[in-house]
Every structure is written in structure tokens, then in C-alpha cells.
Image (cartoon, rainbow, N blue to C red; front, side, top):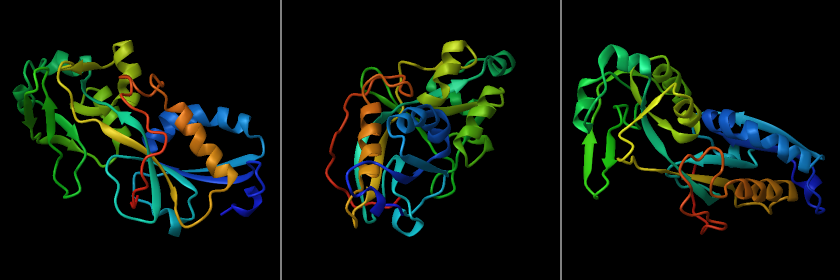
Length: 240
């Protein structure tokens, strides 16, 4: 860890960041050039992984994580909400048609990631009048990496649930079709995390402030505007 070199007040030294693969490729690769230009004495080590990481034991300074967080010796500040869409490629529609109702999804090829129990994750939709409907897909392809789901859907292999920051450009360009836009899938919290057992060095505080600033409503990786940006969420014991 490079905490001592930054304790004098000026952000400097090496910052070790952990993030998911998709967020790193699609979001941090866009933001980090501005960060290092703003702080010329800071170097960055970016570790991208879909696996759980313990900040303390792995020597990570700060992490970005999606979804519910488990117990550990870290502080979690919520940045905002990530939206997800059910998407399909025009080539798939040309071969197999378009599902007209949520129930029709059961009769189409799905591409999905396994849940924590190893079983495919269900798709639960909230309707425009407050109704809900749930589909348990039987995946034609099951894969444990979100960007691969995106690529498979893009190539017409099936229908999948994709994060808005991944599929947004493809929807805008017509490469993907968003199904059932009037129905909403549960959104996913995005959080920035850092250890509680040390005083934050200026280099860590600089990045936390930077990523909060970048998480304002209307940021590029959010197709839907954030309903809330939390500047200082209550510290929550959690494990990555």
C-alpha cells in the first residue's frame, strides 16, 4: 500500500483500484485519463475481476462494486443506480421472431449467468401499473461473465439481460433491440468501497471524490438518470 507517501496532503503515489471487468472496460477506461491528468503525481494499478476480492488481504485501496455487499472491514458509499435491459439482436429476431409478452420469453433462447446457487437467475419485471411478472429462463447458453453475455446477445445467439452502460450504444445504433421498455427489471446499486482500518490517504480521498463527481445524474454509463446520488452513505460493514 502507498499510504505514507500521500499523507502530507497532496495526492501522490500508486493507487490500487479493484473493479468488475465490464465496469473497468466501459467506465473506468473513460474516466481514468481525466483522473491522472488532474493528479499528475498519482499512478494507478487497475485490477479487473468478476470474482469477490477482500480489500484488506489483497492490498486494494479502493473498489467499485455492483449489487448487495457482504460483511467485511470496509466502508461503502453508494454512488447511484445501474439499470438493466432485456435485449435481443435483429439477427435473432429475423430467425426466431420477437417475444410479444413477458411469458413468451419462456419459449425463446436465453443467455444468462448462473446465480450464487449455480442455477440460472430469474427475470422479475415491474409493470407500468405496479404489476409484476417473473420468468425463469432455461438458458441455451450459461456463462459466468457479463461481457460474454453481451457479445453472445449481440451476435444473435439469444436474448439476455444487459447493463445499460454496456448495451446503451448498441441500442442507439440499432445493433440491439430493447424488449418491453415499459417493464423494468430491478436496478443494481453501484458503490465505492475502501478499508476502515486506516486513515484515508489524499490519493484515496481524491479518487473517491472524483468518482462521486463523475456519478452525477446523466453520466455516460447511465441510460436512465439516477434518482439519487449519495455523497456519504452510512458506513456498512461489507465484504466484496
